[in-house]
Image (cartoon, rainbow, N blue to C red; front, side, top):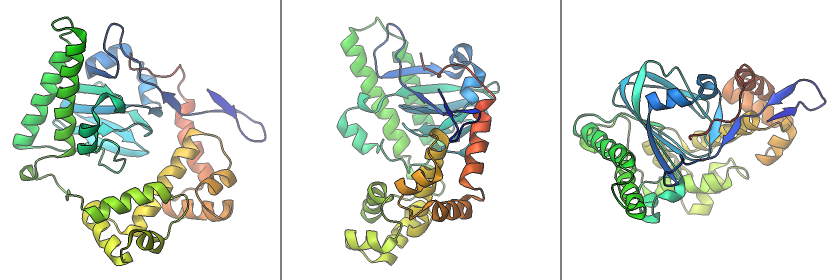
Length: 311
């Protein structure tokens, strides 16, 4: 889909929304495939184009190296690394020719509510890449192996039983991904405390209305310094930086995904006017909103084709 620039001019392609589409004859809600299978059926240009899936991606890299962008940040995966991108995040693949691995695509509603809550599958602040090592890596690989084998075993069990087995095996994998063994030395990780989790959720609800730490502290019953300490311990940044990063991310999504004016985006994000928004965005990213949009859209304009579908 394309839209005209405001005031006319050349059409500007939007970042594609990608809906989940179950393979023919397969249960809906989940799919497991290898990167080799992905290369065979998906156009490389489409994979390299920024797109916005409405479902989860879990990718375990078995061999090689892969560059993958999630929400405008590039990540380099090595053997044994696990990538988890979530619905609504803008992503695109790098060169797949030197990488081998297994990829799980699943809709949020496929897992039972208890597993979804324990695995924090709606935690958009979770790190996109994990680096399990030692026993944790072996358990992660074993969970992926079992899920991959069961997905390919359609016909060995009644369909409804097969579906439940897949659901349980996926639950094991996402729980392992969300809670890597501390003994494995997950670098830079710190268990999230209640203070941080409450603040994180409050920011997700309110970042378009307030960017002031004091407002969140007052609403949650904490001192501002308490919020900053909790956020630094878990996320590695202070409370103000945490709020601003969330605002910048939403601004990037709106700029890349749609064709709204800076004034309209400023209003949606709670800025007094387009000038204040533009100054904030440029100070945080080094680019004006229009320059950022042109850079992202420029990559999309070089490729064509219809929306990528995992089917």
